[in-house]
Length: 291
Image 1 (cartoon, rainbow, N blue to C red):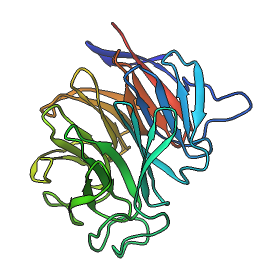
Image 2 (tube, one colour):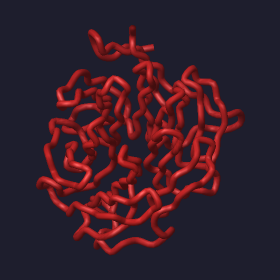
Image 3 (cartoon, rainbow, N blue to C red):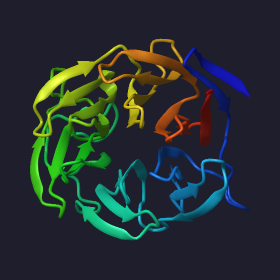
Image 4 (spheres, rainbow, N blue to C red):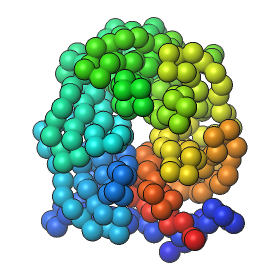
């Protein structure tokens, strides 16, 4: 066991914390998220895509076989799970035990953005979807989806799936995107969008009005918010620096930077423990906060 951080934000790091179900291996982990009861959902790029554990590592079950071809984004709000199927080009919601509820988009249909692959910068913005990255439920009851790998937009839907508005365009300016990759909200309802290839978090009102940005980071793969009100960000390797799990307060001040293996998804439970989902290393590292 290794140690990361210092002072109030000191953690013991347990590599490959969750063990696979009997007879299986854990695949590429895209996201990790905790529900209100501290059950941990591991979103892997193989069937079954969702593995469910207790926070002590006990395996509780799995679901989603055949529902999601290319798992990417995963968020939980209340008793609902919100997932994106990247190459399937749909965003879907489920109950906590995996019953499908809502599907947005048309499977295998891609909006015309002129983008065909890396470096993932669309030639033009378009409607839903072209390789969406994350889906999340806002406190106002609307659903927001970042549409990033071959688009440069945030889409806002009503609870029943009606498109209300979209915003964003390819680029580096305020309100523009180069791979919007994750989305989360604060208590005031502001949106925090991980603009990965621009290496920043952009902040918007629920109506899409640009307010501010946080910079000085590796490309943000995922952003989560803890019960403490802080933001937990999975940062890519950049400029010779390693990957980090970064903790920032509501004003964007850096509280801790925890060196990590390449982390694509990040979750935090009610105890303040952090779960880092690993693509390259195919597993989940747990950062146990010292009390």
